[in-house]
Image 1: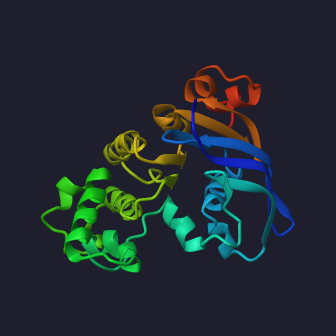
Image 2: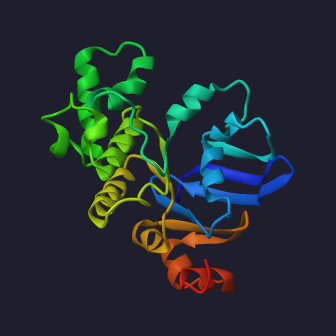
Length: 252
């Protein structure tokens, strides 16, 4: 039986008076890649930001319902928000290298943890870069500025920065939208390997990517869940005509 890592229950989300997520119920299984996809303004990016409470940075929001991580509410005021964002890391659409070296970018979050000696930090950085399929390309220039990397390398470095904190869930928001096919393939290959260790939730940059990587998929339309299921069912045998129309390119 599949283990549920995240459960979204009767969830509604508002920016001011505008409702963005409507009565969403969704279970995200552990150690699988779940694609949450839909046309523009369907709430997929908002949903990913909700899962590690980045939306809290906007004070004009409210919600009802709940999101459970390992059976416990992520909104429980007794829980540490910093710890939640370590456990549930996020990679954004646009790479965000810090104005420092490659090594310092990847190790940045480790500086906030205790009892990290230099050897342990280096080993963690190396492991994260290997997991992000970047180590072989940068191992001889870790002191070089992160901005000297190509766009695809910067994005994989940002993946490594998240992985260095040893999260349980990795959220990936259209991280390949501006990348060339080779860089996209490397990130997708990394995701397929990483799901053995992490739960991955992705808002793919197109339906083709979702088809390639998804174990499970959820189709959202204007903030409402139309249907969800295995990747094969959603993309090749959808039950709802709206899903079929979207994945076959009739709209979107």
